[in-house]
Length: 245
Ligand SMILES: C[S@@+](CC[C@H](N)C(=O)[O-])C[C@H]1O[C@@H](n2cnc3c(N)ncnc32)[C@H](O)[C@@H]1O
Image (cartoon, rainbow, N blue to C red):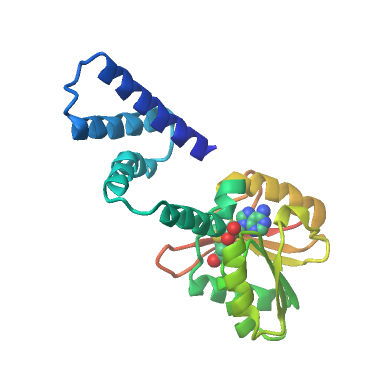
């Protein structure tokens, strides 16, 4: 959705500039001025479309960097390769609005404490990324069987390679919304606000009563937490713990 909005902002601003150029309101040799105006107009459209503030630098730099790349005659396969690489890493953003961000080691330690407190011998991680949490838990708690699911190809591959030393860790290439959670009494996820309502419905319908679901950074709207833990890391990450009733 955001990508579609961004493309629309860029196209509209280019169209506007084209009209400006046709009407000769601007000198035709003012090429760089056109680029600067295009960037600012695209950024203004982005604000009007209520995109997050961090889109502004992207809009400001998009067409100027594209022009610079063309001027430098960088071979087109480099762009194709970079695009494919980014697609494989940020698959979640393209298909479900959940980007790849990694948790800190302190979060993993805190989840390990929760797992021990719950005396759970299994743990499910939904959206494992490159295995930051799953691998740390497998190391810290060798007696706990960990299953971690990820659907972005490259992070999954990295996590799979990292998991090979641990017999208690199973890395699965899977869409979390297409799996059943009824065998899991402890689950951890660090996803995005966009999917929290949907994940709430899923865990309520499928996780057994009394299970614990720990969500890093994002709340499930209108759910009451059993506990909120503030982790002592740089981001002061919050872990929202929900008991399934
Ligand atoms: C914010 S990252 C968290 C990574 C890791 N759990 C951590 O804490 O460091 C979220 C991850 O969830 C993955 N993801 C998003 N939607 C998913 C889905 N439907 N099924 C499986 N994984 C998903 C993304 O690809 C991304 O790697």
